Image (cartoon, rainbow, N blue to C red):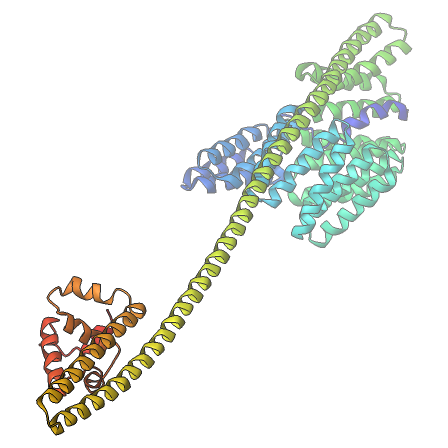
Length: 575
């Protein structure tokens, strides 16, 4: 008997494959009212997504329309986070509808956008969706890689809700590979974490997952315990779809323990819920399970009636797995009754449904291969683009480092040049100081020499006065005049030469600004440039102090300083 139920087990436990639902009209009306009152487009996006996150609204028939509405509003208003969240939601809906290509397209776009904008939570949710799609396609390597990446991000964020969800996702990968021990390990870790933060939706999810594992291990009593726990949460959350599925799976496990009466009650209870929701796929599943209960109790006519109800639902809505299951058991019933004609009719229906399912599985395989190719191509292009960006960054960094090195070298060269110029200036200044000292020494020597010559000249004057003959007096006078003239010329020429060496261009600058200056005035300027006193100038030139003062007065007038308080020596020192 169990072998007949095994085929339909996959249908019973596909909890996320609900199709068009009729629930939540009151909630939709309230949502539409709220959207009309909101002015901020971003708030509208958030309100729609919050509505769709509610357990009661996750499987609405028009949920994809609302998710797409949120996506369009977010895109039009450049609301990046809302756009990413809407894409993840759309990806989940297309996944449930087995449109894996569109699901992956949204998942991949949301992943890339979240990576670019550093939205960690949205990136983790995108990776989780990608992992779920690959898990459904049987590619557990890609699936687990994405789940573990998602887990790592949630752990980094210390997001316990996300960690719990990722642990559950990883557990499903191990379950798909029939590694029940590890599956239970991850489901229980997720459950423990969700229980600690009172995340009812995640607690319910793990109760269901654990029940599935125990059902596969034929530990039906344990499975029922966890399903009842999940049911209690579904009731608390007001999740009627979840209630119906939990009760139907409880009935399935009751049927497998041989308790057909309790199983029948459970199936009828879940049937009432699904009819209330107008969920025809779940209604068809209930018909089949009720049919098996009657079949097990040898109530053939009643079982045939329910199998035919399931068959009609399957044919009306295109549920090929339902058509196949119902046709198969009806074929066996009529074969046992030797009603060949009816049995053949159901063989034909089963074969047609099986062909459709085979085509679907084939298309699913093609979709998987196509999806892998597209994903790998996108990943390659993404990595290539990333490598190009990295190369550009390396070039920029290299350019910046090179520029920095060049700048440092230029600064070093400038500093060295500045130091060299400073040293040159210091050297020149030192040389000027030496020449100034030499000039000063020479001036002092000239002054002494002049004093000595003046003394000799004075003595010659005395000799002239004491001389007896006129010829002798003339000779002495001539000698005195020649000695003074030659000495003054030589002395002044030597002074001029030395001064020009130390203060090159001084005379030229003066004459350029004051072209009326005489040679004697230029020499006086030179004496004053050397900060010589009137007394020093008198001793050097042999002029009277009064004459020098008068010459200084005339010089101030020619230099336009007569009405100024500017010091003559200071003025000349700046030329």
